[in-house]
Image: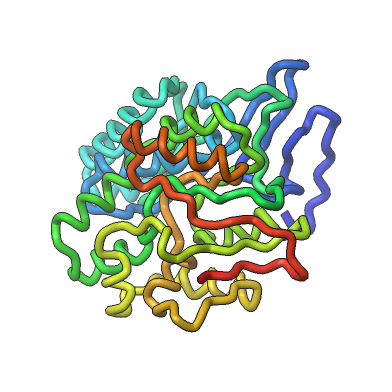
Length: 319
């Protein structure tokens, strides 16, 4: 939003000045709207699964704000001279299937003829104005919980190179096509300090957003990081997306990697994620209970990955 002067009234709770996941606008003392939009290019060959993944990715921002998504509008860019409309139909069916799972009403949408295929949603949700979860309100002593495995960017690059087997691809698609709804519903039972979802900036980039406005640092335990099957092996083979290098440059010297951490393992914290997990900051005792409940509910990747501390300088240390 550089160069734009955007006026805000007193009902704006979260606007474009903040680096948060969605905008929040107060309607009344006990109701606020959560609004977001997102769309992506294909990350797999199956159009139905692409539709599912794109919809999950779009809805995730509402869950990250502590909200409940209610309605959505399709955003479609489709090369009509390159692909048949049957493919578009399958993409939309995939998105609609996810919206049904989420209890979200599709109201319509907009499409254009475009050389590059894209699909996503504009989403409206609701939240209590005093229960909005922000991404930059961590507290010293909090534990950080991640609810999905890392490595989608690396695996997507390996798929393009034809270097992955069916099992890896299936797990990759299943992870991205899983809503953060169940994780969010469990999260809201606990005393959460802050939340975001891990997407294009990678784990390190999103952690930096969580701490850069406060006097905090984060210690990440590399052994506790949940990782998708095949991600570290493909990183070691050089299957590195361009976004990973950009994320590493963005975080820069604020991320310190211990000497004993293998490069392939370290790369995972910079890997740009599509439809990644929720990253939740909360007191350690609550984090332990929450992770146990999530695993019992089938959220198998849920893990305590690190701790928030009060530092001499804002930094992320991976040990």
